[in-house]
Length: 356
Image (cartoon, rainbow, N blue to C red):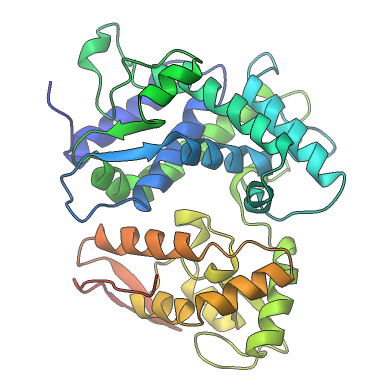
């Protein structure tokens, strides 16, 4: 059966993953969301090409997703499996507990950069678990397993063998055209996966969750409080003015994600700017006009990397470059883009070239 690259057909297959039975853990949802983000950041020049997804990168993205979610909510660490157990959850929770006992970190990016022995052990455990279970079973929608391979070849998976993983290039290979199709579907599918994830966690934690708690924000929302330090650094370096309209931010400063958090979830300093109340509210979750991303990058990688290092914050310059390229390259020309306060236009089909 040829790979499914028609967006509607592939989207139906992925939605079927949500409807294929009562999930006992959130592993599959984590893998799907990580694959969507990596697809956006890996769009090839040849849109019909097969694309290798490095398993170390995929593992890091899964750890990032659970990193936020392992922090307590109303005094409770939320269960993410029906029996409250799980190798991946325990590995991330134990790593987070160990790291935060000695210093605060806004992102697992800093833990990755430090490359501690504790992180490497946790990473290896999570990767082996992903290959053994969710990556092997993700595409099993019916009993006719051989007819359901629509994302990647998983015939070699289902093992925790380091040798087998290495023999397959430490990567899964998305079928030709699938990467671009996933990137195009990401804005529609991510909210669906998040809703399913919230429903699963609520079901697994009925005894401890208060109906008034904002579970969705806890699991997936941007932590605005933690952005205070980044906002202070941006103010000191670039001045107390709105990145978009140059108005003073002294009376009401907001830290805005240039590429919307809801689309790519990049908290690095490269993706953060100061905004006034008016621009922040007007932009909301809209995709900005490409020139805004270009100006954010034009602040200069050495400047942004250096400023991030000063405040012990990730920069993620390269991720903004690749995510921006992927987002704009896969949007139809009629996509609404935010141009400025109360100004929304349509995306023009042009090549997006930014400094790397």
